Image 1 (cartoon, helix red, strand yellow):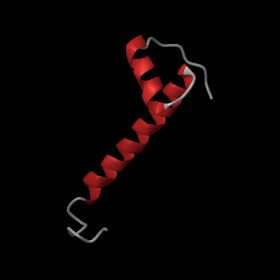
Image 2 (tube, rainbow, N blue to C red):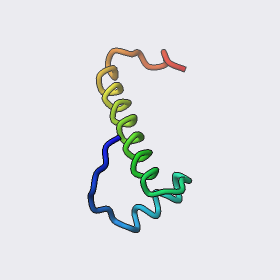
Image 3 (cartoon, one colour):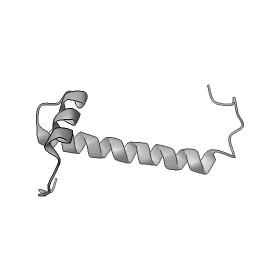
Length: 59
């Protein structure tokens, strides 16, 4: 882990904290970043394979 300092919109931070069900602001930032990375990897996979996987082949 590496310590970082940056500005974050307070309202967005509170909303994310409530939606993610975590207690600390640090947890909100870590979990949010992990989810962004996971979703980006998923969408890159979808773009890469969208024409090579026949429709209906995945249940």
